Each structure stands twice: as C-alpha cells, then as structure tokens.
Image (cartoon, rainbow, N blue to C red; front, side, top):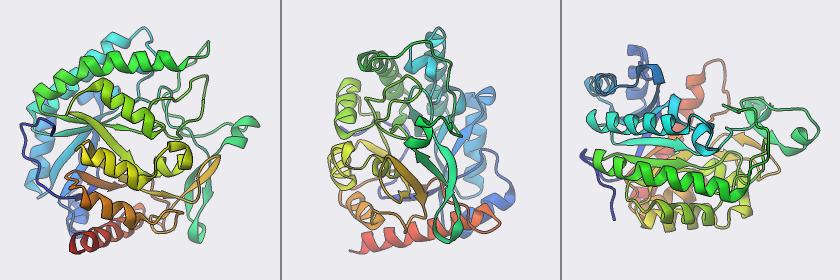
Length: 334
C-alpha cells in the first residue's frame, strides 16, 4: 500500500541536497548550479511550527527548489523515547506536533532515528588523498580511547534488554502512525550507526539488520512509516545485516517502503571502518542506483558524511552530487 500523502510526490528518483534551513542566496545558487531541484533540511526545535515550516517551504519554492523533507532536531534520536525515560510522553507529543506541522506546511517527509544513544564515532581518520573522514574502530572504544560525535547520550545507570527497546518502539510507532497517515507525511527510519554493536549499555536490536527492519515495519503496519535507507550504515554492518544492499532495496522498495536514501560508502565493514568518497568504498554504488530504478523508487537520494575535500566543504558536495547524477542518468537510460 502506498503512503498516504496530501502532497504531490513526483515519480522517479530525485537527487537532493542537504541544505541549511535558512540558506543564503549563494547557497540556493550553488544547489541550482548543480542541477538539483530538491532539498532536505533540519529545523531547530525552538522554531518548530506550521507557520515556520510553511515559510521555509515557500522560500525554497521561490528559488526553484522543492523542500522534500524536514527534520526537527528536538525529536530526532531522543533517548527519552527510545529508552522510555521520564520525558517520554512529552517528547512523543512534541513529535506528533512536528508531523502535523509538516502536513500543514505541505512538506511530505521527515527522517527519524531510533538509536537510543546516538551516532558513535572514534577520532577521524583519512581516506583517499589524505582527506579527513569519520571513522569507527571498536577496539579504540574497548581500550578506553572514547569517541567523538556521540550525539545525545544520556547517563545510564543500568543495562537495557533488547525486548525493552522493542516494546518502546512498538508503543511509539502505534501512537505516531495514525498521525502520520492523517497528516499525509512519510516517516523514514534511519539505521543504527554503527549497527548491531552494544554501546553505552544499550543493545541495538531493531534497526541494525534486515530482520529487525522487517519486524519493525510489521509492528508499525503503516504505509507512512518506512525506511531512510542509509547505504553507508548497511555497508558498515556487512554480512551481519542479514541481506545485502541490493536485496534490501528489492524487498522494501518493492513494498514502496523506502522514502529516502543516504548515498555513502565505507572502506570495509565493522569492527573498523572509515567513510570514503562515494566511488572509493568496497561497494559499487551503481548497483544500488540500478536496483532503486528497477523498483520504481520515488524518494530522494542525498550525499551524506562526505570526506573533507580541499579547503571548501562544497567541493565534496559538488563532486558527490555530480557522481550521483551521472549514475542516476545511466540507470534511467539502461
């Protein structure tokens, strides 16, 4: 069953830019010069309202860019929800308001993460040409070296069990799904990053494998709850994900359950990976683009976690988007 939406979502794959929620004229110009017509953004929780979301969407419209998705940093990857902490009910209500605000503003999509305790990394390493890139090495954590970029990690006083996390997701999904359907907003759930590793006293049983996603989608049982498929995370997990990138796209894409794709690559799977340029990892990214085309994917693809290129972050963005658009063109022509 296709997701319910009050907003027109054009058919076909759409390469999109991840932009600031209040871009400069130069930012808009840069994105249009790359031939990109779609964008996704993140809003500050303090500004979350239907009026603000509408204002942002209209500004993008005036600049020839369709605002496909908007996240809200205040309700993304929130421990109170995933771990059922004291503010859980308030945060779920805040999330529902976010969904209703998106619907009122005619923004059809939002990304959500249910990782319990954030994205974990160890100190940056280098990839091709000495470019600095995000890395994760489980041995460094075990040796007590710590990590950077943990996100919102609460101080936890006990270990959590897998079924607790399943129960917490179940209650969240069943509360949120009817709101998303009524608002006509698609929710794409991002994989755990890194997947399948117990971190900070919390296991990651749900969004760390094909089987976990399958069970979660059956629990949610909503056309409006699906995947934000981060190919990079899937490659981080490797064989432990249960199914490869192409098989995962065929299964969930065939059910119209993939709403957005994070298009990135890594040098090898866990226990130690370094993020790479999109054409330089262990996976041929064209294979993903080809299968997305075959299943009729109609969402957006964005570059993500781009290694630092040169002296301007826009260089890596331009390089990656150009590569993605070339692969898209090839897939469509074939």
